Length: 128
Image (cartoon, rainbow, N blue to C red):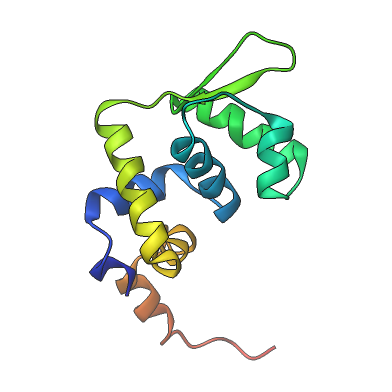
């Protein structure tokens, strides 16, 4: 179960900020190579999803304060998180390298209440 390995504060962070593995990998890419700014194209060349999706996540991370956007044209993005947020992202990066499946499970199970899931298994559905 993901909760056994992922600390609760990290699970909360994942639940609050991640909706996809693509989103996670974009942030961890910029976190891991934070010494230079990244263009949308450069991120796309590594992630290989879609440019509009990459741009959307980059802008979302700027809004959250995890990244900084330069005023260049085209814009470039730099890792900008600090303090506790930077520490959580560093922990997330370490855990994703060693236990990627656990992190992926946490992303996709973020809204699931274990007790409710168990109760739902016993619901009787009406026959059509």
